[in-house]
Length: 330
Ligand SMILES: [Zn+2]
Image (cartoon, rainbow, N blue to C red; front, side, top):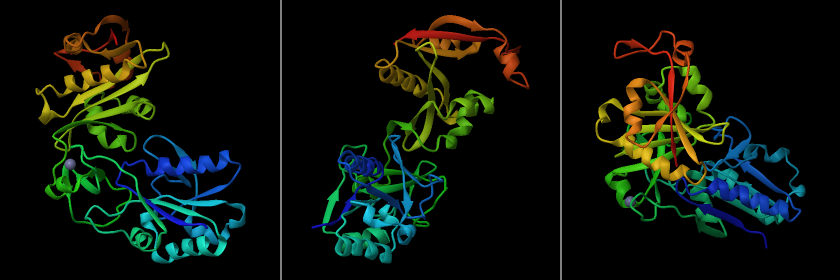
């Protein structure tokens, strides 16, 4: 018997990655699984579902169900199912009961205020099988709430759905969600929304075109203190097989507390498994800082600053010309 499944989990519990893996498993068995999502969620800007882990897959919209020949499919998968309307959940029930095709829905249970979404409400009411996909709060307890964070603070009122907004969401346990307590200090990898940190990125490297060139491919990490970005770093892969610390900045009000150093030491630990060496290009004033972390002068790129920065950068009364590269074994 075909069933309607609702697999729910908080933000960052790998729901989309799970959905993509289920589709892949069907394909491995020589079967077709249709991937759908509600049209409302167009954050990807196209007909695809994408997970934070980088996996993505093409999809159709739930609103297009009437145009799709379902007899070609052995399974229907719905991502972002919290955004479904009641009538759309009913339509999925009809696919299960009328056509005998299993439908597997992935979505959030509740919004940032703790209220059920419309889609989740009807899936909770009607699904044959309800399963939880677990993730953890920074404290180690199971995270069941989705906090909306603005400017480092947990907010509890506003529109239920804000697309394209600057809000970011963090999964928290109920206790920390109610108290509005974010991790005292944590380092997170940022895969979507790197541009939100542009002011910090430009603080370390004022050439926006250069930053925009390496940012999409670069690995970005942010050190958060009580939810506020205190420092960020971007690491890229070099053609010589080493990695390069391309950008490192501390928020002005957070300087002098060792956050950048903490982030650098964390990067050493992360990247030593993949790369033999880390490079960093900098100006004379910052050489001493990097030497404290074991970097040694390696080579000089003549005229780098003269060529790339207009107006020129003046540091300690001197106009910068050459970029000094330092490197360190990992
Ligand atoms: Zn917690």
